[in-house]
Length: 143
Length: 143
DNA sequence: GCTCCTATTGATAATGATTCTCATTATTGT
DNA sequence: ACAATAATGAGAATCATTATCAATAGGAGC
Ligand SMILES: [Zn+2]
Ligand SMILES: [Zn+2]
Ligand SMILES: [Zn+2]
Ligand SMILES: [Zn+2]
Image (cartoon, rainbow over all chains, first blue to last red; front, side, top):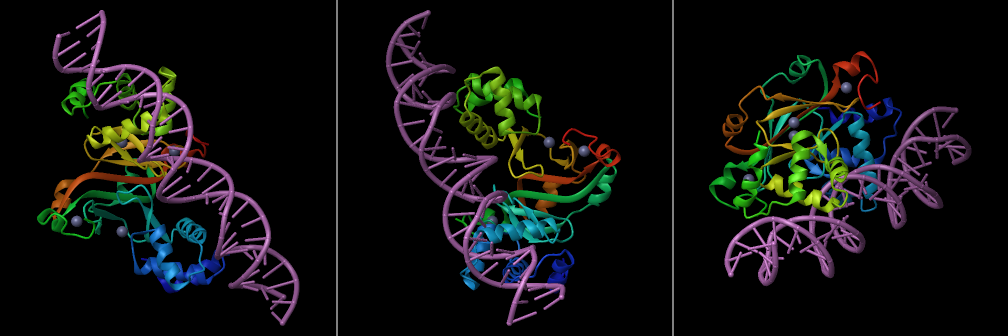
């Protein structure tokens, strides 16, 4: 996981400015992995009601380009974001929306290299039903 | 891989009709894995110029619901389709667009079950640069 | 094969996510 | 503090996908 405290320096190193909006969005992403753009926007407005949705998308794109954050679909048709971290599998419950991060049980880079492939980014997801939801239907959040 | 020849029976078994459009789209998907909706639409028009884009999307949704086909992002922000088959990893070259199917090197269902998770569908992808593109820039298709 | 019932289709409007445009604002170097 | 200009906010524009609805065509029964 990238150190939040090093981000201002990281941005300046890339010739980018350190704005209050970028600091706020980074804080939200660090504290709440797997949110989508709209959810991040809503939380951001709670702190700074003047922030615009375009800024959220622009910032997400910038941070993803810098490999500071990663995006993934998580079983839906739009992106969800989290700070970049070691390769992991997302177990996504289609009933309650819960997302569990689990380390990948093999060496991904080596796996690609063995096929003459230089992996830059990985997305592993398993969509299904979690314990709670299988036991008691509607047991989780999303009914 | 699901047998193309059994599809008409499969559709009827689900109470669905076997239309010329569905037959055509299935043929295209079987023959060309990993196409997106627009690409499938273009190929379909080549055979039946009267087919509509809505029919393509409706049919893709139906076939995916029946678990006849699977969708995946393949590093882009929209869906690509292929006949349902055993779990596999997609190695996607971001330079030339090439997609390679490789078997998953571990038991996915067991992996999920071990975490109390009942996996219904998997999406594994590795985005990076293929042999050809690393050797000779612009060596592949998409320059 | 012919007819009827209704699922399916085609055209297009509508929606949702994301990107673009441009005037205004705010960060950074001096 | 000041100037230069990158970043923001608001809204238009674009792209992928879904919904609507009148017209069409599978397919069960005759
Ligand atoms: Zn659940
Ligand atoms: Zn995660
Ligand atoms: Zn390539
Ligand atoms: Zn594949």
